Image (cartoon, rainbow, N blue to C red):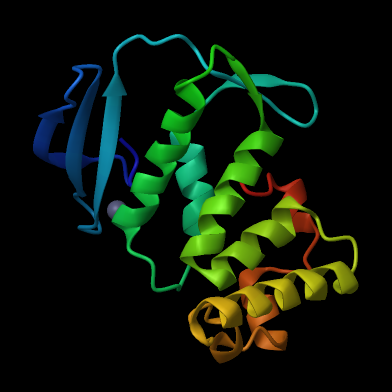
Length: 191
Ligand SMILES: [Zn+2]
């Protein structure tokens, strides 16, 4: 299993747990190179869930790709890795449950990720949304930030979103890759 942090392929299993319904085996692992911990899941033969990509290609749903998108959006943000892992599981679950639909679009996944990020971390949300929605111009981008700040102020008298303090000014934009169009050509959010 490839380490999510450094890409090393050797890890040791710290803990193995079987989910309540017996459908999933969850393994807590530690990377032998960088020492970071992550979780992997083995699933017992489920109905395949297909993802239809923008260019029309189909591939099997992979919660790991969702997790990678989340990690990228939350880089250097105060969000625990476990929370992101949990979110990617919740997203997969939400698609598997309560629907006989066996095909979903990358758009549906993106919208669900954004919904969750919006409540979690403002900066991460804007990062993800900017790549995902492919903001056409700076105006749309600023509208989104403004909307976000207004919501933040309504909810808790501000600061929580972390926008301001991280200075989504020039350096912030550069760091998060906003405004660089090639990001999406390289696979965007990995969805
Ligand atoms: Zn590693």
